Image (cartoon, rainbow, N blue to C red):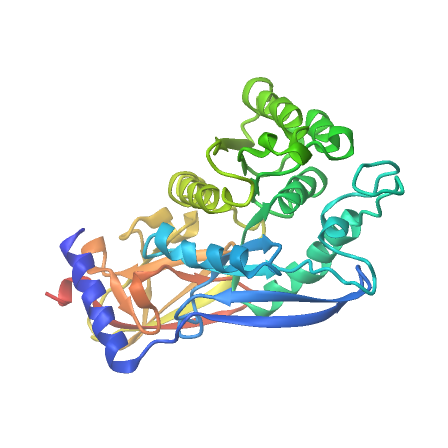
Length: 390
């Protein structure tokens, strides 16, 4: 590790010991869903320091079947072991509990309605995936975006029938999420409905690059799951050998020594590690088409400080630390009026990375992030610089 980064981490650790730091938290919500005509619960996990860092925004991971808290809790816990020091995520757990009064459960949420399927003795299975997708799209995601500091990169995770719904959502609303993690999905359902939809999906119409992960365990060893393997092999063959698309990165992983339930942990660990550390870091975060003129002010510790701003877009110098110099508004204030796309991620320096600024209310050296609004004004405070810590 770079010596200056070590010094920065020690400095931040020392400050957190003195002043304390907010711990990670989980909040439960209950809403009356118009799309499902039911009361539904969901959970939102925020990482440590969420409220202490006003200019840190977060990608969001959505996890299905959170009525099984193991799936939700394992996901938000595993993130800290997979991501690096500069990555944190909001994790949303979406429940699908069984409602005895309504005779409604996760199969209704995750599977589309069919006229004939083995899941119902009557031959008619009342799947409700269309409305459940509307519930996610029109109620859950807007709620999270309106109440939390979210970025526009969303990942969705499902296991078993929840994984089937992950694929269903990709095939029906491909712009709703950026990354799709489907752990041991049922692809045999409805006479291989999802496989057939995959064959006919127009991949050329994807507007942004997507990440799709699919895994399986030893499901074919169980009598009730024996028809999963032929459907799975058809999907794998298409994704591996037939599909040619630069808009979709596909990763397939098999865990033949694990049963259907046991495969969740190794599959989740592999998919998150592969996505976060190998795929996401290579793909540029999508920016809004619109630009907004904003004013950025920064308070400096010394009146002779020359301050540069650098960040994730052309008007921020594309991370060149000595290209965009801020204007001197007063002895201890620097200012810049600038047109920015959203989200804008940036840092301050004195002209090189050795002199990167240590900001007030921003631990671990994370990028400062704003979602620009017309005529918005954003104020920051520099407490010190990396090269001044030595």
